Amino acid sequence: MRPSQFYMRIFLLLLVLSASAFAQRPGGTTGGGTSPAGATPTPPPTPAATVPATRNLWTCTLPGGSYQVLVSAILSVSQHEYVVDGAARVTEVNIDTAGQFAVRFYYIEPAVVAGPGGIGAATLGKVQNILTDAADRSGSDAWKKVVKSYPATTHARTVEYRVSSKESLTQIFTSAANSQATGKAGQANVAN
Image (cartoon, rainbow, N blue to C red; front, side, top):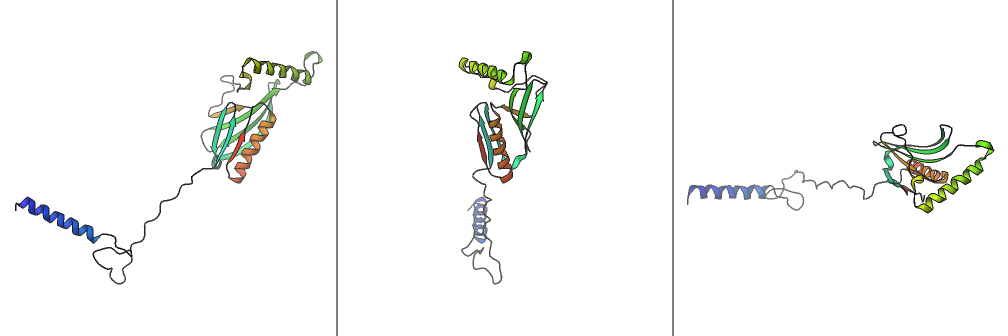
């Protein structure tokens, strides 16, 4: 037998002996025989931490897109109204999050009580409805989209959605506020 073969056999023998010395035995003992008196058995392995199958998300689905946020990341939910340049009344729902982006949902309407020549708000509202219906029939839905005038109305890290009614905003606010208060998933579906 050559010396290299001899050393290879010795190496394999030592490998087998060391593996059997540290092998797990039934009953939690290790080694080649029974455990000595007073020895502590090897504890069973710790199970891996379980990850919840679903995470609590608040979701809002609108014609202009969808928005999702972890409920635990919602810091505040607010609803307020303001007038822009005396011409438009904006009702807005803001959701501030722990992430990089805030979200804003808004409804915009004329802020005119009486128009030129005594035209009342009801007349202006009817004209607006006629224009809206005409836009719908023409296939143009630009009036439903977010209105921005760069750079004056652009806010960095803000996601914006425009809705067509105050009722839609109330639905969004109520759903988001309930999710924030309870810590449970929620959903708002806005048709238009």
